[in-house]
Image (cartoon, rainbow, N blue to C red; front, side):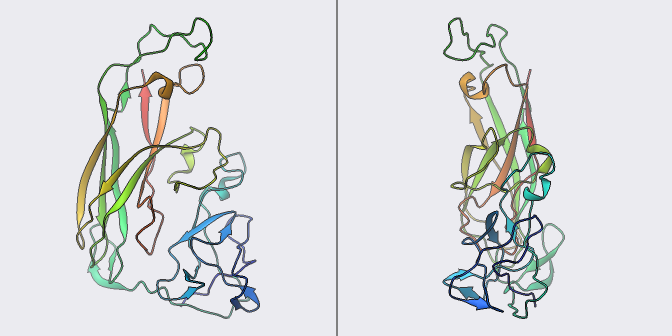
Length: 273
């Protein structure tokens, strides 16, 4: 049974947790999922069975959102941080996420009574689009500016979602983010709306889609499209950016409590020819 996380316990990055102001373990406030931070918001999994102030208790190896100086040089630990146990803590809490002897679609032991979303494949089709040579690289709005135009059509976003559990997953939202090239090496990167990100340029939530639930031990292939190549969108500043970087995140609204909340994809690249 794992130790609980508390205010002052260090994460795998240089930050330490915050915690409750009125519920304590060894005189330190107990850390809560989707309430407390260690640089970035701690989003879980946490415990499914132990709560403080109405929030799930945080446990070691919970996911922490990217924060601080990520992705600057020397700051990689802030991009994929996790909570870790305090050495002097003597208070323990069960995860509440038991596994079974049944093998899930991804090959791991399936969870007994909690959905566990896992992202399989993720790709863009096509993975390149062509720009009209008639444009120029002046900043939009300046005299003489002529926008680059793109061949008409769509880019299809294809992905596979698995439910590594004996219980069905309810409906959830999927989000497609565009990230800066400097952040791409640290993927999979967890991004959710409403958080303050310090990157420049800031990640853009390009598109969302609704998945209507997944059956126990189910796996489903899904897709949606990016349409209408808007040159003022594809051209962020000047000159024309030759590649764009995308990542997918499952359960964007965090409506499903899962053992592992790191539902992020690797990066897919769209090349501008």
